[in-house]
Image (cartoon, rainbow, N blue to C red; front, side, top):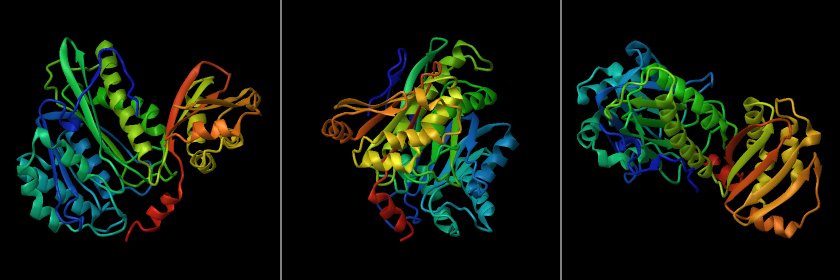
Length: 414
């Protein structure tokens, strides 16, 4: 998967521990019966962090989200740690908030911090009571194992139906100081562009106020995670959390300007890369789909059009079958909630094997079906749309829809 290159930004290793002052870890506490798979993770900062978060818009929200929101409100957007488990979402349970708060207390006791300084998150099966005993029994082991080298253990601890761990990090400069920003993400199914998408934790040693951190996160979410769809289901536990501890020593960013833009670009690069990893690892996916919509009258129209195409089950099926069916794409554009002139639309399909124009001015074109099938046989496909109505551009990401998606979800609880 190609990384977007921007001058002054270097991709580095380390995930959530790429930034100075952060440690993390993960272990199997018994929620997952497979002892080889971690199910409990932690991130910790030596310094107090400005913290921002965005959450699912689903009316049914996991108890950890409710507690995290309360904690960040109580501290004025400050946190020092994250405690997270997989296999059980702790959602739709009468004792859910009690258990989520208990997780905060357990982490705080080990780290000797205020439990309100803990971000708590859970992912997994909805509607099953979360056993707190395994977490109580293993929290000391988890805290003792925290290290800058254990970022992969933390990334593995949040995986559910994911087939690969998802991490990204970059280094950059602000005020002549080297800053680092890195993250980890999980998600494979129940992903839809309606904030947030899955669980995502991002750390940075740049100094940024909580208010500007929230502003940057909101702006970048709109053009990355909110433009991602695997199956059209908005999960109950989705969260993106960003923590900034200021260890890099730059002057704290408290307003818009060059420093803010530099930070925002770093956040964009990491979130973009993780968005693409989430899309490529969609449940049962065989292909990463990227819909690039250009020539829109404004950004919102471009986003709406691209998202409408990327979340279309018929488009997904066509791409799975290497079928260059422009009708599927035009249909999805036709029901997009945006003002589009369908008689101006051009559509081109592309991959590493080449490209084929399948539609011009809203009308299908003749082309070689064999050549098109070869192009669409690749595992990364671009759906390029030109609306010819302006200069705005947006990209959305997703995956094809295969037989394996049904198999995975039919067996999800077993």
